[in-house]
Length: 63
Image (cartoon, rainbow, N blue to C red; front, top):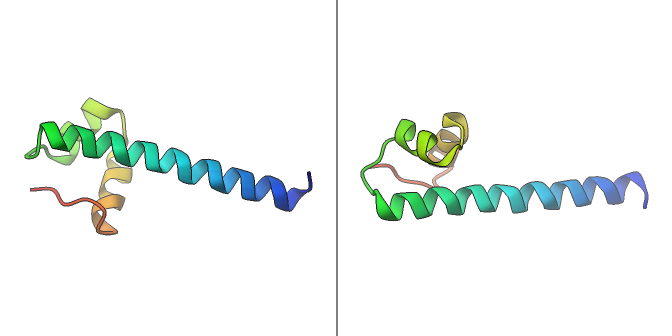
């Protein structure tokens, strides 16, 4: 496997990991829809910066 193949594999793995993190956040919000970023971070172990990135990109809406 060449370097290009490794980069593609790493990129795919990163996207899969990101999807799992996003799903974890969505599951938490389904149970606690009024949670703020700090509560989500404490409950899920996801960094606040990653949560705010999802909000900025439009993937999450916090109430």
